[in-house]
Length: 273
Ligand code: SAH
Image (cartoon, rainbow, N blue to C red; front, side):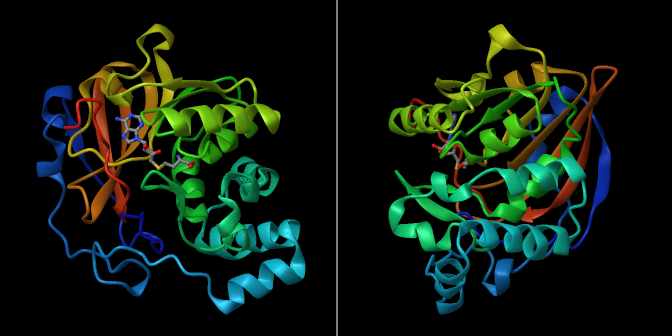
């Protein structure tokens, strides 16, 4: 199952203020709506990741820097992401260093890519959208669940935040840690574990980003969010369209906003649940 490329959310609204307890069953709180057809595909369809002739020609002809510039201009700025720091970070991180060799020619294409072990590196637009929604300030303490390739963690590091990232698959955690160090992001703290439980020793976090989809908001993550903190997470059933939720903790209460529909790889549990 691959993450499906999506177009900008069709709608955005604040759900309502939720207590932590209510948030545990958040999936049931999501407003009923017609699923978006991501990228023109049927809802929940597995994306076939095949380079178009256009993608291949673009990268071969322009080189990675030009392809990256085009990615930012067309896919990200063109869809309304305008936080200058996020755009600088998306221009700085060499995404082609985070994708397997066989997909190098699609490194800057407008869709997710396989990274092995049934996982994906997210579509660039989704990375930018989620990062912007967190309204990060340099020096903040940020936790990512779902390190994958390490690309999102590198974007966070570029923003000058203190980055902690957890990956459940040991091989991906090791590879990402080595890659991040090689690219100069050695300050990123990588841990192999089930991210459901967060990273208690380093809590509270000013922001938490979850890049795999559970069917509910993990209570430990809600608990480890600082007052004034932001948490972004796709929630919904595995293999179907999920809702991207932004939570903000104000006076100990979580306020939820639905940012639209997405499809992420499932959030897995160490016990195989
Ligand atoms: N952010 C990544 C892409 C994420 S793909 C990047 O930039 O490349 C989702 C990742 O979440 C996968 O690598 C998957 O193994 C991981 N994952 C799924 N469930 C998890 C869990 N319970 N704890 C930690 N990581 C998890």
